[in-house]
Image (cartoon, rainbow, N blue to C red):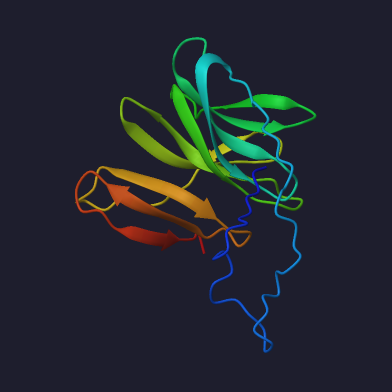
Length: 167
């Protein structure tokens, strides 16, 4: 977690109560911070993309073979490889839900082709049937909610943001 504060004299410009005093007067100006190295799946690098209220982190990491795989990380289990769809060799996780679902949104692919996917809390993966417009070559999911609505954008042609749901 990274928390930042500012103690500059103009830090509260525009923030004052009826008396003209900042409601932040007397607030602590220093905060203890910590940084946790998540590790890798055996390769050189990893990328954290999202964290939920249960401190589950998702992202992707290079593996020992040099490909990237999606991961789920928590302090108890460490980094867990989420794998790919059958026949794919790469994956990326981009968003994780909180609460009891623990579902993870991402992509699985091979040779520049990406398929939007969701991993369940148990680790199974399923493809999402998000249609790709004829004037784009890639659809990139970026976030989702408990109702199953996914947002993202298209690339490789006409770039456009979208919202999708199976309903």
